[in-house]
Image (cartoon, rainbow, N blue to C red; front, side, top):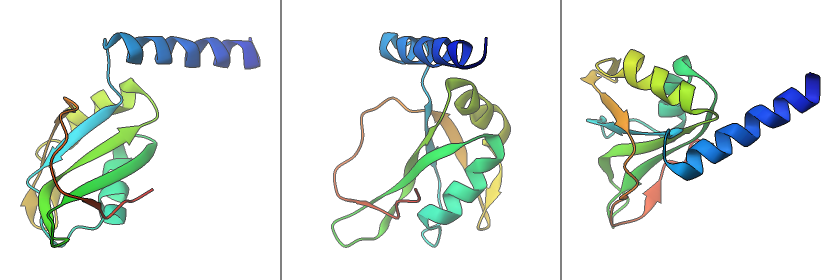
Length: 113
């Protein structure tokens, strides 16, 4: 199967993402203001291959305390939700859920990937 099998798997993942059946993005909340994008990417990497980790910031560049993390696959995102929600990062218990895609006002900062 090799390359053809991998190509079919990627196509299936794209179709699922477009159909909205699964998301490869998660929302992370209750972040300590000291957490950087690289810190978050490293922590969330325990669940899989993190493509990026964006911590949202206010107009002054201060963390809003939440972020969006994108994984290579929806399965990795699901694993992050089940295994990392409730984990400790910089002395705070974070929560992880599927990203609903609403986003927030203000700039993005602390990009980790």
